[in-house]
Length: 86
Image (cartoon, rainbow, N blue to C red; front, side, top):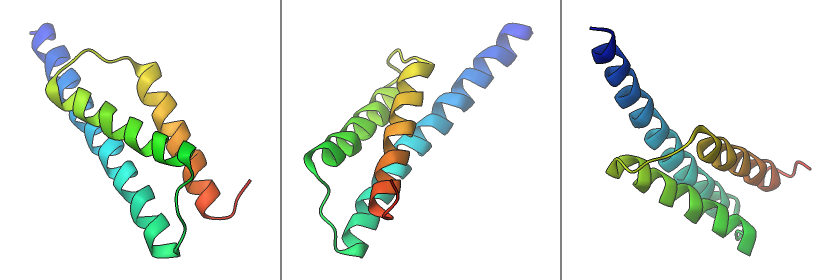
């Protein structure tokens, strides 16, 4: 029974990470467009990487928590950049 709960948790976490990765990438793109800013090459690479990670998660491919952490952090930095933060 415990294995069933672990499998259900893994599916739930994967779905959550897909939503975070894809949603955050879309939000960064939308924020840049709304504010009239163009994403720099690094920002575009971050958004594309997060979308690739979302697709990877959605397809059921192997992923690591470090991959998710990296893209969430990178997207956070991009959001700060768009907001004028340092």
